[in-house]
Structure formats: C-alpha cells, structure tokens
Length: 442
View 1 (cartoon, rainbow, N blue to C red):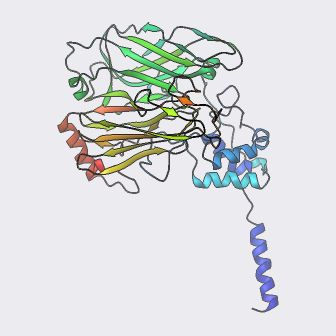
View 2 (tube, one colour; view 1 turned 180 degrees about the vertical axis):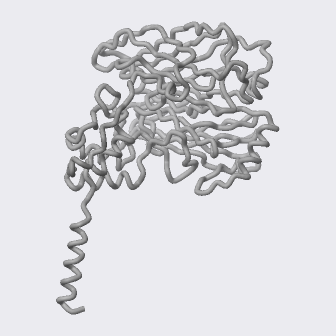
View 3 (tube, rainbow, N blue to C red; view 1 turned 120 degrees about the horizontal axis):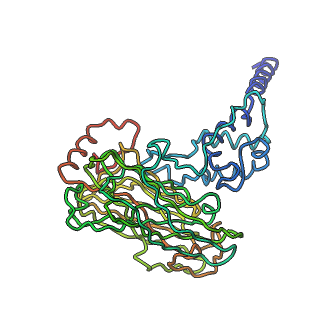
C-alpha cells in the first residue's frame, strides 16, 4: 500500500474511533443502576451507600467496578456456567452490563449529556408488603413479640410463641416476611417461623406430603436477600384453626441500640374452598451431618450429605445458607437409573446475602421417587477469604455468625405418582429452546 493511502486509512480509523464515544452515566449507566441497584442503594435502605445521583456514583466508582466485575453485586452468586439458569427472580447483571460499567469507570466515570438522564425512578415505600402489589393487602399478618438489641454484645436469639387467630382451615398461596423498618432490618440476621398445629384426623389434605406424615414443618424462613415465597398455582401450604407460630429470630449488634423491633409475617390465602392438588413443604437439607463440622486454622474444608426422595416431588428453589467462611455449595441429583446431574451451584457465596434462587416453572426439577439429592459445601478458613475475620481461629458448628454451618432451604412440592407422571410427560413434550432441562424431566 502506498504511504499516502496508508495514512488515509489510519486517519479514517482514528476518526471512526473518535466518533464512537464510550459509555456515560447519563445515557448508559444510570438506567442499569435504576433497574438493578437503586432499590437497595437509596437513602434509608439496606445498602451502605446511595447510587441515586451521579455524584454518589462517581464517588464510589472504583468500588462499584470491583464489586460488579467480581459478581458480588448485585447479590446473585449462582454459577452461570453449570446447572439450571432460568429463574423467576434473576437480579444479576448481564456480561454486557458489567462491561458497560467497567468501561465507564475506566474512562473516568464521565457524566455525559444531562439530557440523556432517565427520569428519576419512583420507588415504593420500603416498609411495604411487596407481594401486595400482586395479591392485594395481606389476608393475615402475624407479628412476633417486641425485642431490643443492645448497641454492643454477643448475638441473641428470640423465640416467642404467638397465636395466629385462624378459625377455619385455609390454603395459602404466598407468604412474606419482613423485620420492622429501619432498625429491625439492620440487626436481624435471619428469622424462622415454625407452624405448630394439630393435623391428626384431618382429611382431604393435598397429596403425598400428608400421607407420609410430613406435617407443616417450617412455615417460612427470612434472611437478607429473601422476601418470601409465591407458591406455584398447583401447590400451597395449609393453616388450621388454633395454629400458632414459633419464632426463632437471630439478631446481632449494629453499634447502636435497636429498640422495640418486631418481625412480621404476611399470609395471602387462596379463595375459600380452593384446595391445591399439592402441598409444599419448606425443608432444611443439612450438609454438615448435624454439628459434625471441624475447620482447622488456615485450612479449607468440604462437607457432603445425601437425601433419598421418599416420594415424587418438584424442587421449587435453591437457597444455600452458610456464614463467614462459606464459599460454595452445590445441589446434585442422582436419578434412580443412575444418571447424575448438577442442578445448581453457588460458587461465590456471600454470607451477608442469603439469596433464594427460585426456579422458573418450566425448569423446576421433577424428581422421581428414589432420587438421591447430594449437597456439597465448601468452607474457606484461610487469609485468602476476604470475609474471614480470623484465619488463625479454629471454627466449628454454631449459631453465631463467627461460627459455621451449612444447609440448604428448599421448598419441596410432593406429588402422587399419577400426577407426577402427567407433569413429567408434559415437560418432555415441551420445546425447551435455549434452556437447560433437568435430566429427570426428559
């Protein structure tokens, strides 16, 4: 190529590059923050800083890039390379959105043209019942007794027993839990609500869960990152007259007194007379064999546990629970014919966020009777774990956040065999274009 022509090409390339501006806050980044971040990153919410204004974002630009590139924020720590990837509540950033934010920070976090700014998002009351937007006001609200957490001190557990006031059998389509606002949300690590009711002699209950005397079990669990649960249209939970709720509320100090707080539970009923075909049970699948957890200083550990399904079932979600040293957890199915499949994995667990990964209806695993669920958990008690408060400390099982545990909360919908066979046949006939379907559903 002649020198003059080569120079012309170089010049043209430079002009083209100059005419392709990088991302700006107003045009490219602000819409992402509105869609994925600001619901938490706003004044008086649970996030440590606001991301509403440009000044807020620019001030925290380097921290924002580090968090999103590491996929720590937004809190969605599922391994995107394996297992089921279709969820009802996916809050993650796409690869393109992460690249946009990173390029914006690397370019000096430019504001851009203010005319490109989207209209300010209008966020609802942070203390509202979120599921009321779908179902209307709750049909029943059950409150714990008041509790106070001092400014400093060891973790505490409150276990009040309260009446529900229910006077007739009702089936439940959704449950939501929230600590009081704002201090309750700052000190409550998690809350468990156990349903206590007498089911002897009760007839006409849905599906195999009752035939196997599985009972009501845990009514609902809450931790930061989880709101509640909407049950599939063919499933629900039953509450009976005289039922009571036994609370277990784990709280920790936040540097100032949190006085007279509560945790509330909202219940949304199906219409009177409606009985869903299936009953969903919230089960805790322990991965550590009870208290058999022993993590030496500056060591990593792996624990594993196995559960055989005693009836056909649909798995509705995947919610790992660990503490500061927790790093990863997987759920695998070994089907009765010997096939194995890794259903879900969290490979970047963050103990401050106990995210409930709710499967889309079309891919929620259908597990035949006799399927073995295998849960594996990894803990990292070394200095390489940024969440580790002291790698030189021996760590065993315990309720405190400085102790460790590993279990998985899963809503299991048990079914009779004919209904399971029908759902399995329908699943097999579906065209799952671009979607990974569990082997047990093929």
